Image (cartoon, rainbow, N blue to C red; front, top):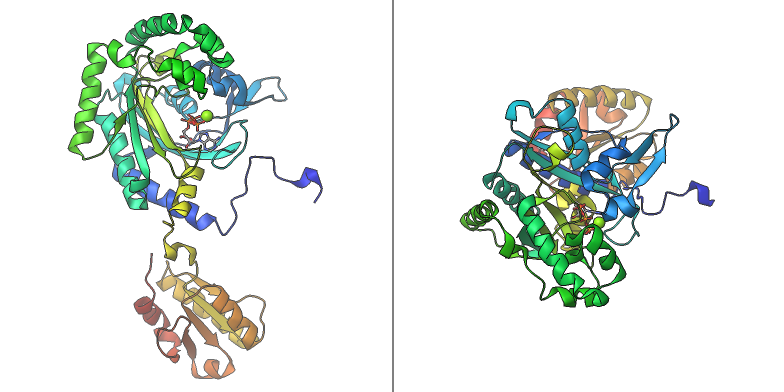
Length: 429
Ligand code: ATP
Ligand code: MG
């Protein structure tokens, strides 16, 4: 194929053989979030560039080097969304959803875009499911966000493979005091810091804690710890969160170096990490952002949320072989018909059956074919049963019913009795 007809590097097709697992994952999450009282919101994929600069922060990996930014035909600078929180806050403000201190528990799903180096678990178009809660100060709601993800890992069968890391970044005042101490300490070791960290020391010192550079990490071992600078309010909040996680029986580790990649976090930050996916180990990450809404021009409104990376969770399900067998079977019954008259009768009959069994997955053979070829297709479809309609059956107003996976003998069923019979042998989702 010529190069221009290939997909863009890091942007993947999700092929028919993969979509059942995606849908299983998405449906599991959607049902869970319904049960916890979260409402879905859908935002556009493209926003004004300014939105992301203002919310995510100019000195972050995302804004400095990962955004897909372009000018549209009006000369406006637009950006493919790199994450969902900014657009969600924008939408909430634009439509007054949090006016008068009204609480909101929202979730969204969709593609995000970041110009990163593509590798396993890291792509340029990837998908997130995110939750954002407004006007609930926590720590009860911070705990709920974590508790429901823990339940999700249980439903998906991956609890043993993920670990919760927690930290508190305090209020902006206590973070300010901590920053001064951190900058003082790091400045005394300037020559041992990597180039990026030296630059960040001036622009966004907390981000130095996030470094992957081993020499800088060594310097950080003795650096001041945020925990020692927490204000009383943040400390009480954090203790309240930990008490709730203990009550729910959810294990966690405190990671004092957890600062997250975005500028807007305060108080709670957390990540669910796995050691089963190599370097791309964070499957879900979030935290509290009490200052963000105001920073974006709204009234003071507290917020807390997280986003999970769908690709990484799908990879984890595959790696741990936690893919339920039944999700790949998409056909219950395959109907074979032989000759024009039988085809017409088969169509009429199958529509009647669908009226009675709306959830039945009934595939009707298309393109005619010999007995042998239709039967092969029936088997290949993964169906549990084949229905067979030829001239003989048509004359008697019956249809052949043949189990394909060794569940009993072939028999003839009267047209009128077919739906009732199928209802007894096909489990309907
Ligand atoms: P990382 O440190 O791995 O770059 P991040 O801190 O940039 O992650 P967030 O912005 O917090 O990630 O996004 C939340 C989640 O979205 C991540 O934990 C991850 O599961 C997923 N994610 C982020 N970037 C990518 C990507 N480029 N490809 C696939 N998944 C991603
Ligand atoms: Mg990143």
